[in-house]
Length: 312
Image 1: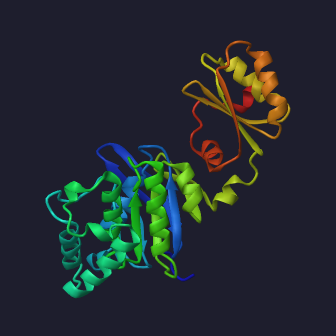
Image 2 (image 1 turned 180 degrees about the horizontal axis):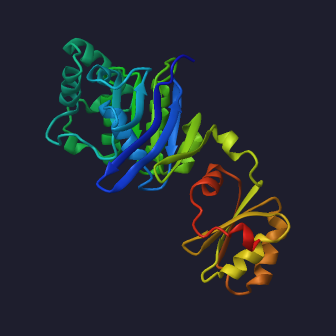
């Protein structure tokens, strides 16, 4: 495996008095897609930004490909941020030629690789079109094309599919994973989309309050969970009712957020009728699924309204 592509130890980063990263430690192995999952404000984007700038931290240590951050490392890194950073008056081809020059590529090399990547991302016919004429999804695919143009070893993605529809999201990831075949490029993805991460990441880290609270493959993080996940629309549920449900045989983790109660269980068929008997007329909806990465995320990160152990 060699050195980790990205290695953080005890990083503390502040915005004024607020700690965006608070003892952040993480090893990102070289090669494959690694996901950073956490709520807004958890520190995901801060870490992506620090890695992208290849800057040393005031507290803690950051190493990229085994080296301290330096300007020389920036040519081995590319970043796609949440917002498009393209000039709407430039054409697709002009955008890629400029990106190539910024990374020291010859005009011929940038043109050849640019055409190949435009084909991969379904933009082969749009090279002469202005950025302003592209849809939002096409601009996202162009951002990915631009980022891959100089063939970086580390690709940093900060919520790259924000604001695009599910079909466009699938097309973008299909193209990216196709472009990655046979390569050892490391992709570090920060996202709030748990289904997206479950589908594309080999490993993930859950981030909470500027710290890494769990890491592993999606399968490892789901191991040990109850087999089924029950989501109950239950407006006005009380702490006493939550504690009662948590004490039932077969009930696992019980949390509540925005009038939706989440219950992990091994026997949804037995639990759901008992719910309706406990709160007749109060329950608005019930959804039953197999346990997913989202359930592991709730267990480690999103514990709002969790029933304390003492109440069980």
